[in-house]
Length: 284
Ligand code: SF4
Image (cartoon, rainbow, N blue to C red):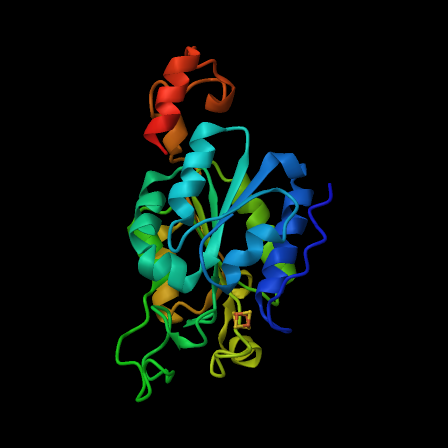
């Protein structure tokens, strides 16, 4: 079960994305997957490169569109474990519509967002996750827009597995990815993954000082949605751990009728050669 390949990541030394990559690799091995059971689909951004750094099926897609592609992969081959991934700009700006609808659809894939609160690949602009007052080249006088509260948004959109972690906490992050893979439905894991090159505010030290681990909160119950929302609001969203899980809600695949028992990729389309060629020509 070797999920490492020989491609050397070209992230900056110290980038949080290294730990996210390692956590995905460990989690996949821990839940007993083989490389050909896993597909990793990513969007555009520094973090989007991750699909090329894991020994599995991989697809580096287009900006903000990792989720439509990942959902298509899962619908075509239910036997694959599918992980979608990308950054906060990818998933919470250009891709936000897809994110919300994938959450409410509850399709059985895991979405891991590497949230560094900035656009790193394009050299440091304010993102939807940047805080008010955050200064970058695109907001030289400080951002006047409030940061998107993504965990609260996921709860109100009907999320059945909502979690958050910190890239430095490999143990917690790996465990959450394992739980997300095993969850029967859509799992969203937002990971604070510092950009050491362009974000000089939300640093490793800043997160260590400001994050609250839910495992340290006495009586916290991740099956209680009201408690989840209150805890997020009380801590300005700066919590890590399993925030909410609904194990009762059926997944999209379980609810739609006619979803084949066998993976679509293995079904016999019974197309004649000319019919097949005509179909292919439509996409050319
Ligand atoms: Fe990571 Fe930031 Fe470097 Fe991109 S620019 S690789 S996000 S540290």
